[in-house]
Amino acid sequence: MDYQHVRYEVADGVATLTLNRPEVLNSFTRPMSAELQDALRRLADDATVRAVVLTGAGRGFCAGQDLAEAVPPDGSAPPPIAGIVRQTYNPVVRALRSMEKPVVCAVNGVAAGAGANLALACDIVLAADSASFVQAFAKIGLVPDTGGTFFLPRVVGMARASALMLLGDKLTATDAQAMGMIWRVVPAASLMDEARALAARLATQPTRAFGLIKRLLNASLENDLDAQLELEADLQAEAAATADFREGVAAFLGKRAPVFLGR
Ligand code: T3D
Image (cartoon, rainbow, N blue to C red; front, side, top):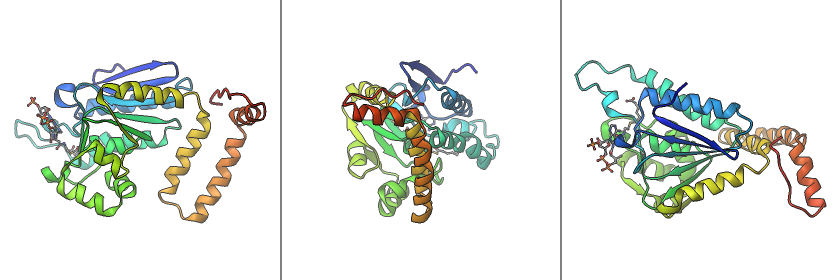
């Protein structure tokens, strides 16, 4: 598939995906989502890619659904929304969570609606100090989607999630960090350098173990303690069977730096 609305770059084991409709703050259309889904599938299958950066072109990260597409300006009937959500947003969230390699989200500007919740589905979120997060849905009479009602209460607690979703106020990146919604705020000018450095570091680490850690964290959102302990035992066996585990132990005992190959 050729990409028009997403930039796809790979270098040194790190893929950078850039949402690329800057004139409308990278708001989502169905074609952009189809490209993003295709790109995420490619990355999941490409063993040479060991970390991913997701960001936006221009001054915004992603302003959620393109509202011109959602409600056709010619007054014609909008397409059935449930199907759009299932085809446009749900597969992207599932692809991010099931991808067995780390995804760093570099939030370069405003993240609104589905754009805010897209960031929540990534593994490590860095944000420019100029970035902001808006649960914009209720402001236009919609409910949050793209996994927001699943992730947000879990990361910031029910009280904050309720206020953010009901009020729809813009949250600065600094406040988002303070409430544990994102990993770190960095100066806007150094966001991409920081994100690429973080991804480059992750790309030299034991990728198989990272994939298993993601599986455990996904399961921890729903499992009880007994089920989680059992899963930890099972996945520890998988991790211990990797070449990277043997290398990690050999390097430790040999008092040298490990060289992990992601196998
Ligand atoms: O319907 C379904 O398919 C269901 C799925 C829903 C998922 C959702 O995401 S619903 C939520 C949709 N998003 C929004 O409601 C956010 C709308 N945008 C805003 O509230 C503001 O633009 C921002 C707070 C994000 C940023 O404000 P600001 O002042 O920095 O920028 P701006 O001037 O409003 O926007 C810049 C341009 O982008 C502007 O175009 P123009 O005037 O320069 O030609 C604006 O119209 C355009 N733009 C921004 N967001 C969207 C958009 N165009 C289409 N859709 C957008 N979501």
